[in-house]
Length: 125
Image (cartoon, rainbow, N blue to C red; front, side, top):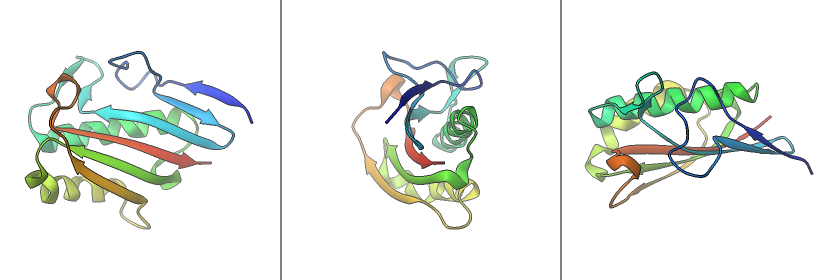
């Protein structure tokens, strides 16, 4: 099995010592994407804006591996507040309108940079 690092110039740089994603054969393991605007390096303000941006960033990492949202088989969503579940679901659904991937969603005490939303994914080519 081959292992290849895949980073995207269109996603914000990692906030730690990790890659945007790793291809292991035909499977892409995508690191958590926050709602950071790539051109400014700043987190968006609201949880809805962060969710939208994080999913855009996820798309950029998928594209770097010649994939898109339809290749995603599993995501994990991390929320600062579980009360945000309904509003971020509406945004998430825009990116996975049909045959959505398996998903877990958990509330966490703190996210990197004090983010409100983060998503990681596994995609298959």
